[in-house]
Image (cartoon, one colour):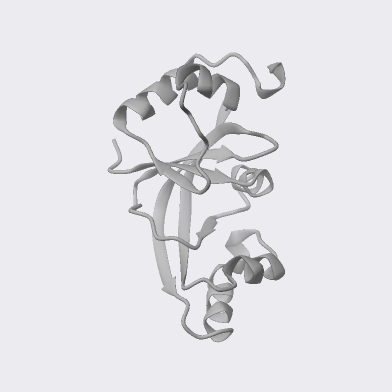
Length: 158
């Protein structure tokens, strides 16, 4: 089992790009404890509101942002082809940020049937999708694996 298992909220349009195989790096403004080989479960935020798949962390790149716009230009040149984000979205996202965290992805797997928020709350009464991310306990991960293996309700069933 990986050292860290992270539940990560991602906007549906970016999550779709991950599972289509186009987006190879997830960009964040906050440092995580993730390391190479850790597992990330992808929760597609509103309006989809479902756990849709996972990926393994290939590597992490943390880049301090100290000089504007020079540092952003350097980061953009490193990740633009893999991030599937426009330059305008990139600049808006990192405006005022002091750190760029690049999570490079591998072994991307889409769940056969997404686990919608209603189903997650049936099993975890206090389940709240993270604003950004949440580290899962071993028991939470086992429960999610169980739900995924026995999930017969699609998002559209609710």
